[in-house]
Image 1 (cartoon, rainbow, N blue to C red):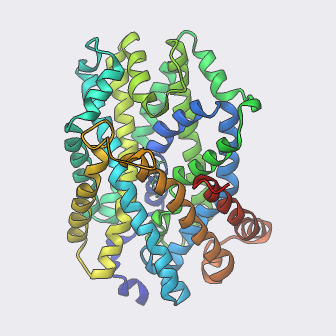
Image 2 (cartoon, rainbow, N blue to C red; image 1 turned 30 degrees about the vertical axis):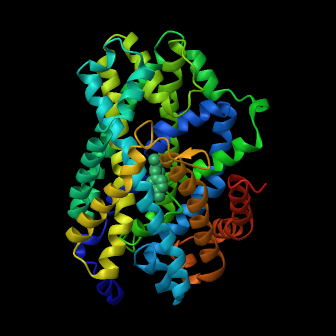
Image 3 (cartoon, protein in one colour; image 1 turned 90 degrees about the horizontal axis):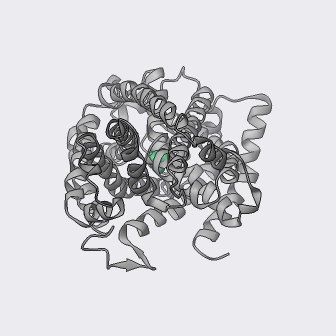
Length: 446
Ligand code: PFF
């Protein structure tokens, strides 16, 4: 209790057990599932990629997720101080800080796409999206202007408003409503997509593996996506874990979050691919898949404006609940470190995050698109560095910390018997070299 007091955590700074599950699922399910997963599945060969992704979720994503929750609840601090509290050494606190910095940076560009989804939702409901202009042209016109900044500001402002209300009065309250709402919308859209004429071809592409399409690169992309999609490596689940009550089973929470996350990714695929194929469109479109290909499909189906609007609302909600978790990491850090009130920490973090995000928003076809770093625009560079460098490094820190350094955190997970043995074996022997491999590959060393 005394360490809780020292960390300034009052009773409003605790999750209920359902609230935690919903909030952690809300963090995991996001643009990663509904925007990135379909397009990388399209690019990297369909169903065989999906299978590899599932394997990565099970042997890497799940064990690291449990490790993060355990570090958070045992350390009862933010993403950095939880390590320090457990290891009584400043060096580990520094490693943990990678997550604080990383989640801040991810929020800065993730909120750009989240903003796009709001614009698309509005334009779909009003029918403006379907005015006959080519969807590529609409996408480029929109992203090359300044209005994405307004939408990004709105998303960050709303997130700040929720976070400022606290863990139980804000984060958990909104997740408990939004996540079930998301499930309802998702099921409606899946029903619509799977009953379209010719949907079967899309389902086959998504679920019938053709292993000849697999390359080394697809395996590494799948592993990176397993991290991103499970929200691990950036201290998010450490921060959320620090608000979990002692009685709650972390093992069960891990299973629920992994299962929910996978289910939503599969359902997203069962919306996107049948729709794409049914209208004779190409799935290997890259990032524009949902903003360019899907509107074309919506425009051609009965009640398409409503279905399209619903789809983009779905994306917006999913992104919003992930941003809540990402932004909470630096907010919790600022509250502990500088003894700021929650409102002050939230206002500052969100404001600075918006400013840092401006170059990303203007670099996708906008005025800053000419600036490139290693041939990537600012947005893609940030996405690359966070997903392929910071996330794996953050994941490695967590894995080594639990595997070799903190017995206290290992026990906090509450596993025993063979499950404990398997978990520790994965953390000590299997996961670290796998992470090092993806890391070396993604920075071009191998
Ligand atoms: N898991 C979220 C998604 O799939 O969209 C994004 C995300 C949240 C990534 C939190 C990383 C993170 F730390």
